[in-house]
Length: 623
Ligand code: ADP
Image (cartoon, rainbow, N blue to C red; front, side, top):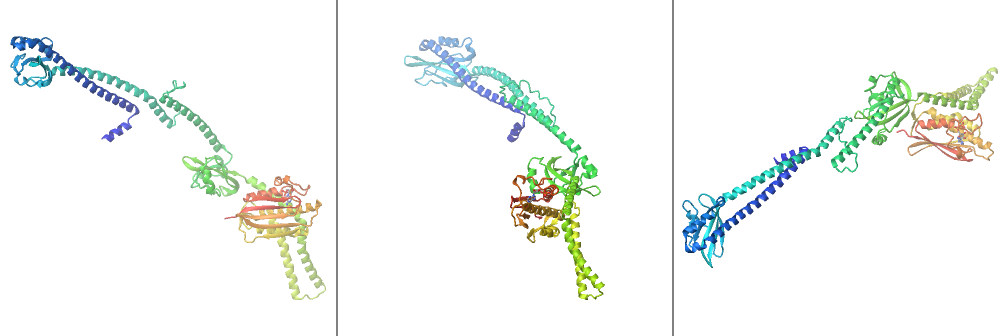
């Protein structure tokens, strides 16, 4: 019961709380004041009336003393009636006189004297009066007894009976007046507290209504609280609250407008951007939405795209570790997920893309915004460039290759000439020898075929694909082609290849191209050093392969001219060359670094001018 009352108070409106608490306090104070005043009034009024009774008693005693001594009954009787004359009748119920033996001498009772009251209020010796409440048989009275003395002797007593009902009546009258006054005061405060609670809570009620509207997205509501708020020095807390509230709504309005603007900007970017953009569900990687460009590029309609797993279009994997902190940050951190990957249009038509993604909320879902940029043309140009540079290298090598092919051809020629001579001489060739010659010819044909095959392989145009590759393989096949030529130029090529290296993700043909570029540059540097007149008896190239910190490393060192520190940062730029016209195109290292980066690798150079250079290539190991 008490709990439910507390709950009701707690849940009632602020207005009612203020109203009821102010009213309760006023009521309590009024009741306390009423009780206190009543107590003071009753006690002072009663004692005042008793004093009046005493006054009457004393005056009767004074005037009766002589008649009492002489026991003059008629005089005494006239005295007592006189004492009860006029207005006193209202208050004074009776007056009577007793002699010293408490015998009645005179009284004002018109009927029989009620005997029981004669000795009921006896004055103790030494006192001269006594007041006692008693009952006459009809009324309650305060009996005021006053002693009548002659010298030191008591000769009798005068009794004045004061009506208690008269006193009570007076008190009641006072009480009614007082209660009326208190009620008027209460009603007055009641109205004031009602008005007060209303004025205090009205702006708050208004604020509540307005904030409800705002939470529903309606920012155009009029607050109606602005009046006078902009003056400085407003101390009223509710008005201060209103002011902050108005400021807050204005700021929200502004940021809403900005948000709308940027939302529109992104919407138009999404709708009319040239790149395909997809919104994916972060967990299932299914397409939630796609822009018109996505429909156009991939050849699917929006209906076909929505709901389809994004991986239907091409490979898409999130590195969860990297994404965990990216997602934790604010949305909008675009990160490249994969570059130069093959994606497929409707009908399985392949093309190359770079994939960018960023986390973003979408319709209360954890989503990803993925953009794919078509880079097929760039990839095509890249591979054309690589091809052109390969062809240049092949052209450069043609003299050496011709020389190399010459050897098996010579051997075959020698064999066939020997056979021809024997046939001409009509000599019989021993079977063993014939067999040996035929075998030699066949093996020389194999050798020539090998050279041609390697050249053909090298010259073949490769697309951009990755496969597991053991780095020693392309190193060996490049040396098969140009190793002999390098040796013919008096260059000592040494190999320190670690066997059983873990694989990397790359393409044989392209890594061959890289090794090739490094070896031809090393050769040029060695030749240049000699041309520049530096005394040099070392013409060495050392190729090493090893692992270091989860990386497969290839190091190509030469004892060439070295790189001028001033151009060290420039050598990877396309068309940068220090070689003579016609000797260098300046594309070798730019192509090399492009290929190495495509496979997630890095290049590091260590060079001392005049002493030599080492190129370190490092590639991540495939897990
Ligand atoms: P090119 O060989 O056609 O000049 P590259 O891009 O292969 O083009 O090389 C650019 C430049 O880098 C070369 O001109 C040369 O100055 C320098 N360079 C490359 N490799 C070496 C090396 N092993 N030693 C000294 N300099 C080198």
